[in-house]
Length: 155
Image 1 (cartoon, helix red, strand yellow):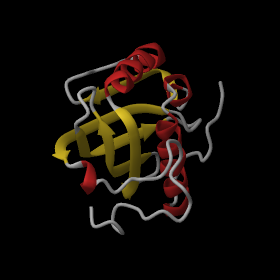
Image 2 (image 1 turned 180 degrees about the vertical axis):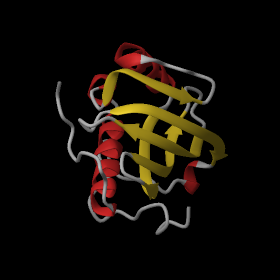
Image 3 (image 1 turned 90 degrees about the horizontal axis):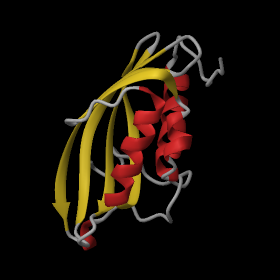
Image 4 (image 1 turned 90 degrees about the vertical axis):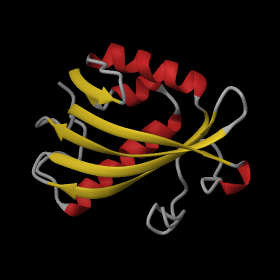
């Protein structure tokens, strides 16, 4: 079985590191890369979808990113314990019709001893925004080091 450091039990520093690794993976837009952070039988609750296992997670993300273009995400630590991390997040995306959105939410994560996420609960709300209201303007991919986080942006 592969390990995905940092491993639990988490400290504040390792929880922040784990969150940034997840953010960078999601900003890659690569469903296979993202799915490797989860256990083979990982369970999700994401809005009204309940994917189970890496294959369903990959399918879910493939479909998601076929309708959410120009995806850019920022995650921020909310709380942590030994093997759990809670984050708040926001991401901006453009729909197939050209409309822009900022989606806000929170996630609760639980990890196995190898640092793979075994459970993910996500609650998400979408806010239509004008293109001029966008705040996540870096080139597609990982958020640049030094780019403001959610609290710095007043989100």
